[in-house]
Length: 205
Image (cartoon, rainbow, N blue to C red; front, top):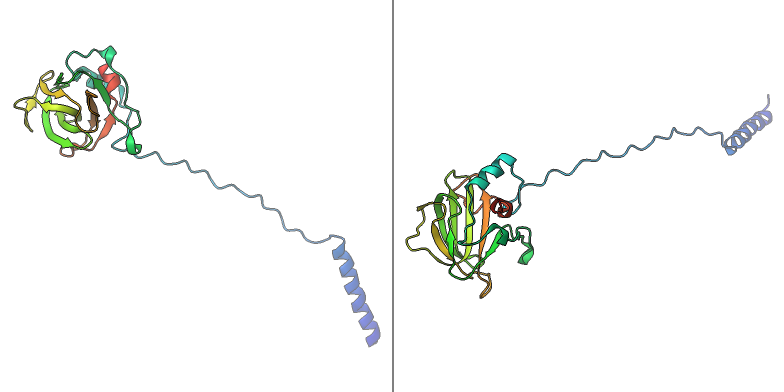
């Protein structure tokens, strides 16, 4: 074969290859089906001190048995559930407001110890009480004044007068009521921290 024939043969092979490719006879890579990323469930929200937690039924019963309405003369059917109500600055109430005339006696909701006497811009004159089993903190706020002789560390009995209904703090002038909250605490020394529990169903027993 001379050089001219060899060149012709190379050109012919190239032409055939181009025709072959042009007809779509190419090796097609296998299509890999995309696999969706696994859906990871959001983790359970952390329990915050201003969050209500559902307590076991036995614990609810125990709390109910040791509680009384902490305002003299107020009946269960006069209570209103304001636990989930919104408050300023995106806060949740996390308590109930028990309406009563000014100077109505505020009663210890259960046996326990006066943990802290406190005054603040929001709560006004207030009391933190630790229950006898050291598991719960009661917070009484917007008080007019404390009962005579009330001191931090004093042991009080259920139904004992510890203060009087008022409108101090941010209650609003003339809006006389007791702000009452319950919190389960792990460390009684940190009485301002805990898991809030709605008092309404517990006092409506």
